[in-house]
Length: 343
Image (cartoon, rainbow, N blue to C red; front, top):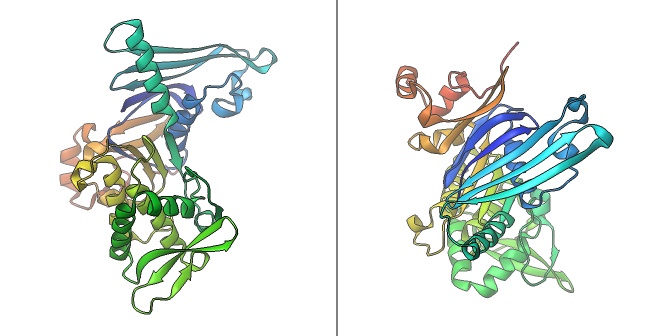
């Protein structure tokens, strides 16, 4: 897994390090680099030569030569990606990508690890779900995947039903625990090769089309489905999982993310998935009051953006005891940082 990422001159991330674990919840104000930090992993999947719009504004270059870099430390080594930017003709010079392994073994081992790393980063996916996209019918095809906005959910569910029927039934049982008014997912074929999903009501057995479900129900179903996939992406990031979700359902969303990150706690046999989430929700933050090592505060001052684990902040125990309030309220007050600063 990724242990940390160091950013240098990457948009607002001038020189800062983001610590990561199996699960990491990043909380902070708008403009504190939460999304930027995760988008960097997308660029690490496919480093490009022309990255002006991705990492830095041309107006910031002036007449300087600037080094932009990502240093990704993982459990099996490091990867450094560097770009040297100059303002001559607005292009990038001397892009470098370097792999450093912890074991120092043979070239063959290095090639194997490099291949593993490539697969590892290629399996990163960042989700920002859109309720309308989740409800869209799709053309059924082999190995369909859930898109970043949630489109393709019906294809993924249909595939799960056919390939892993036991998992699909588990998902249906969990669905009725989240929403007592529904007892299972069903499908229809509105036209050749196209499928859409419906939810069947528990008591009257009516079938409600996906487009007629509430936004929150559709969004929750996307999280629930990911948690029950036999082979989810190796690293997943969620932008504001509280978006469109009732605060009472946030504990269910937390459990879905935990099922990905800590499968052994749910009787799952697969490898853990590294999960990163960003949030503005004090309600979601409250759920991690006893898991402070998984919370990262994103803050910004005159020196730029910086990240810090809540568990490693100076005097954190004294601060929390003195405040004597839910963790979300303590953060909202501003005492921990990571909130908008009034001029």
